[in-house]
Length: 508
Ligand SMILES: [Zn+2]
Image (cartoon, rainbow, N blue to C red):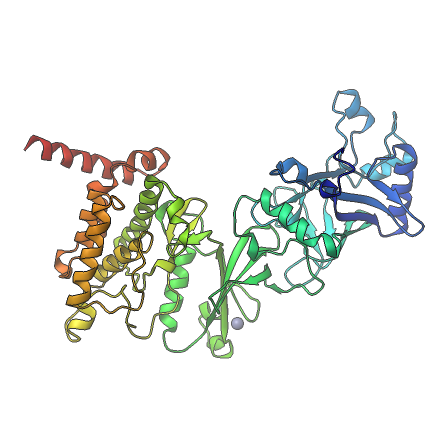
C-alpha cells in the first residue's frame, strides 16, 4: 500500500486562502491560467489556495507548517538567480514584466509575509516581511482593522488569525483565510499539531478558532487552568505567545499591596536571570493599560477588576514530572528559585506566600512568581514556619519565614507532605525522620540534605539568609553549568566564594 492510498496518512485540510473581491478573483484566475500552482483550486463560486498538513505518526518538521505569501521573483530578480516561488503565490509569473504584474508588485513583494504555526501555542500567525501593510480586518484589541507591517517603526509586525473567517487586504486585493478542518478530522488534527509543539501544555489550547472566540484585551482566551478559578490560558493576539491571564478583584483593603506587587512584577518583564517571573501586561475591565488601579485618581472606585498576563509556565513544583528529571536539572531549578528569593530580599522585599504552586518552570528555568494579593491570615499549612503558631506577639522575621517556605516547597518535588499540616514539635520530628530516610535511600544528596536541615531549623535565628544559602556547597554540582550561561557576575562570585571556602576546609 502506498502512502497516498493509506487513509491514515492522508493530508488534513487546514485552511483556504481565497479571493474575496473582484480584483483578487481576477488576480488568482490569471495566476491559475499562467502558472497553475498545484494548491490553487477554483470552482464556480471561489478560487483560492487550499492548504493542508501532512498527517502521519512521526514528529513533524517545522518546515511543514510554514507557508510564504508573495508575488514571487520579478523577472529582474529571477535573472539574478533568486527563483524561489512562495507557496502562496499572488502574482502571475512572466518572463518579462507585464502591466498586470507591475500593478501587483506595487502592493505585494517577492516574499511579502509568512504564515506559520506558533511553535509553542500552535496558533496560526501571519507575519509581515515587507514595509507595505497588510490589513487584517477586525484584528486589533478593539476588533478594529489592524495594519500588519514589517517596517522598523511598525507596532504590529504579526497577528494571530483568530477567527474562523479572516479577511486580509493586500493593497486592493481582498482575501478570505478560512479554517477548513472538518469536524471528523479535528481530533487527528490536534494530535498532529500536538506532536510538533515544543511545549507539552497543549491541552490548554484550541488550535482552530471556534465560531464564538473570546478575547480579553490582547489575549485570545483558550481554556481555564484546572484547579484554578482565576487563571485562564490564551495566546497573545499579535505574537501567538502562550500566556496565563489572572483576574484580580480591586478592593480598598490591600490596594497598596497589590499596586506595589504589580509594579514590582512589571520590572521583571524582560529579566529572566533574576529568578522572578515578570508580568507581560496589566489592564483593567475598561480595557485600558495601565489599569485604573495604577492611576492616581479616584477612578479605581469605579473599577472592580484588574487583569494581568504572564508567560505560561509548563509546570510548577507540585507537578509530578520531577521524577523524570536528572539530578542536576532538579538541583538547578531549586537554585534558581533561591536566586529569585535572594533578589527580592536584596531589595528589602519579602515574598510572604511561597508555596510549591508559586514556583514555576518556564522554558527550562525556574522562577518565583509573586503573589499579587496579600493573604488575609495564615492558614494551617506546612509552608508556614513553626514560629507563626508559637507566639502571636513576637515580631516575626519575615525573610526567615520565606526561607522555611521555600525549603518546604522544594520537598514537594521529592515527597508528598500533607499540604495543610500545621507544624508542631511532633510533626516537625516526623518531617525530620522522613527527610533522613530520603537521604539514606539516596533520593536527597548529602549536601542538599544539610542545606535543607539548615533552612528548616526550628529556631528562625538558625536559618541561613537567602545569600548564605546560595553560598552552600550543595550547589557545587550545578554552579559551573549555570555560570557558563550566566551573563551577570554574581554567580561567578558565588562560585569563587564557595570554592575558596571548600579549599580552606580541606586545608584545615
Ligand atoms: Zn478600569
